[in-house]
Length: 220
Length: 181
Image (cartoon, rainbow over all chains, first blue to last red; front, top):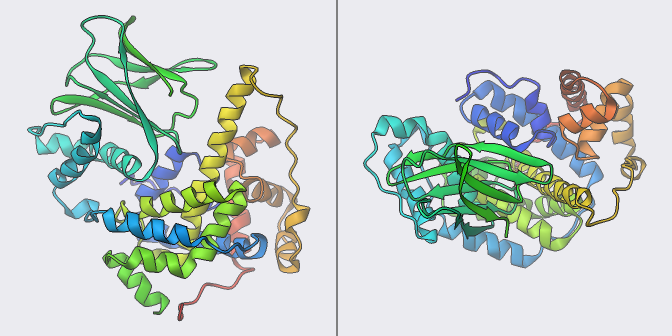
């Protein structure tokens, strides 16, 4: 947990006035802080009361209920984050990633896994519940590692998987206004991965080693 | 089933709890998404994805937050606002690339929403700067950064104005009570 209380960001969260990364920070803190959970609950009740006064009521389509019920039945409910061995989470994450054909091998030290569990949680949640497309990066140089990118549709997250645990490369986003350094994929068993929670402006990505472009992909 | 029973099932993550919670609050959740996004298809995707995100992330909800209605409603609302902002950003990129027409000037039409006297009265009790910031967040779906840019006021000031305004409004609305759903 981020030990610093979010304070006024709680009310902004309830109003939807935070950006995704800011909102995730509030959610993570509130999940482990009773006082802030109470404060957020009060703010949520006020926003719900505003909704009651301002939002026209529609009848929910029956198909939506059936869809939610079907999806809920497929979900393997994960135990709470702070009471469960991390290897179980790795198993769930690996199952999700397997859909694109790149496996995640185990064998890393559990302490290292604990250090990266927050990012893995976000990636797992995003992959599990939102629509995404995936693209194989086109190799620009022959020795480029095989890599894929998942493009979250809403919110616009990115998940880059490089089929090499130590590629020594970084991921650059191409945007309408230039380039943005998204970060360095971190080793995960036999692969390296990078999850970016909010990348709405990315129209393409490059995998680079220094100034050398290894591989590239365009937003589908 | 009472609200307390539903909360207990939800916290215990009993398999049917998500469906029961959805059934209990479906009109509210769908209406919030539909109101923000403006169409049925996007609203359905939004409600579905927001609920599944909640259900796949244990610990997101805890009893101290109170009833499920406010919690789920805000989850759906935030998901809808995120989608709306994403769409606006993509439109802005397309405009920069010259693919679409220039963006029309932003106008906040609060009057349409102020039909209910209680809301009007409650908002009327706020200092003008708090009311303006709160309206831009709630009715305009703007982020704190966008509000600060629009009003030309430091981000920290906007954060304080919005938070203070919402906390003052809390006194104007009755607290959600547990009862039979």
